[in-house]
Amino acid sequence: MDNLTTTFDEQTLDELFPAGRANDFFEALFGDASEGSYDIKLNFSGFDAGTNSLRFFLDLHERPGCCLACNLTYGLPEVFSRHPVINIKGLVADIEKKLDGKASCSNWKLGTTVQQSKSIHSIPLHIELA
Image (cartoon, rainbow, N blue to C red; front, side):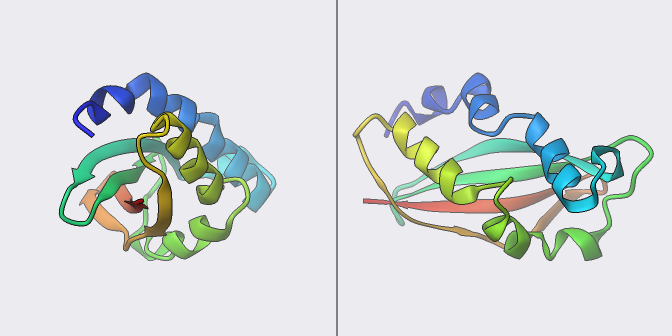
């Protein structure tokens, strides 16, 4: 687990969760991608040896001229966990492939939205390893 930072570098994170997925999500939700108020970027936070888990964040970056309202982002973990465009289950399967047999993903959960700043909110993704 020592080289996870290089395993989950910026390029790999962008492959795992492409920038266009936010537009696809808003297109499915509103019928128009321009109605979305944020972009979504996957961020690797590290490995927790105590819980044998990987920590990621889905960072919501406010789009110019839009408002990243807390009352909207706090309900997102439940929405994201089930939405087929966001596809957390598929994302976790793809993350497991990047582990190249060194570990498998046994369980995952999305945590409560954290407000990093006015323009960035983050949804924690915890992945337990087996």
